[in-house]
Image (cartoon, helix red, strand yellow):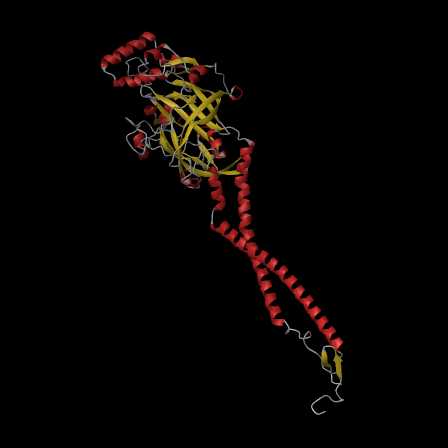
Length: 535
């Protein structure tokens, strides 16, 4: 039949209808299609699994890359580690730093050398031209200092009082408290000096009283009397001038000091941490006639702003016993504790020079300038004619050495310094050495050897140093000194290295993906094509 099926056509009848097969079995065709689909499905599953694994790996590499960039910026562009240390140094109420500040884990050691006058009688009789002194000591005390009545203020300061207790250490001393010493009669010397302010009749009456009690410019007392005080008729007579009826070098230093210090905590400005802002509520003292000399804005010596500790800098310590700020200038870099680097600070050579030799000290001259090398402290010592200097008049005018025999200045023994840790601003080793002297006058018309009139003679010199630091404090300082810098240096190079490594990995991944896309064959049509074979 025309247009229909002919005998030449191979037709397969199925229940689904007529399916012309041109040389191919229908069942085989269906089987091939199924296998193709199964193969395609398997490939799709593998592609999905590989893609998920790659994505997770890629995300990890990207995360490390971003973290490395952040770490590099922090290590090279900020002072994050230093800022963390600074914040740990700030005094905050209840913090561990605050507890160590009010109860220091390390105490001071005070060593006292008394000047024993060995030829007073011969000198007063004119048999010998000069007084002779011998150094006796040291008498060693442990000073346990705590800070009490601490009150935090709203302006980033804390107000407190100092409490000091002295414990005698006989095993470390070169003498006993029972040693008999001939030393200067400080109350008598003070009365002579203050007598110039009295009228004639007052001076005449006071002079008669001194003769009645037999007061002498030198007397013999025990070392214990010198340190912790004694009572005698002269002091009772002079009570209207000297409020205390007992006089001793440590008498007013043993216990809670009445003075109140106000110090910056670093909370509002770490560059002021440890600096005194007020002394007894005053920004400036009223001892001198010049504002510069009355400044109190120095450290108490226990804590300095780390930012102020660097080669070439000048720092200041306010010393209540010296009644003034004392400058310390960077001198050299040294090591303590088997390798801890510190910066050594010393006062300038002219720190106690008079106003003619050092114009900056003119306001310390008080009524008149003395020889260079001594600084008057009578304004804060109830009018007593006392002067401070370096021990044995080290770096002072040589004329000061001529008043007495037995003084031998030695830089190894008599220089003072602070060894300060640059990172935390804390002294790790100190040698504070100060000598106390007295001016001899004859204001009460009592016979005092004319050879001593106007001379400044020594009483005692003191050395303060740090006791042994506890091991836990040493561990912290070693960690700050060595461990943190090593960690910072390592991270400063590790982070850039990670950037380079992860960057290379990302570039390789990108190259592989692009290359794969370019090589990929067109989609297989095996699952959809049929092969027609004409019979």
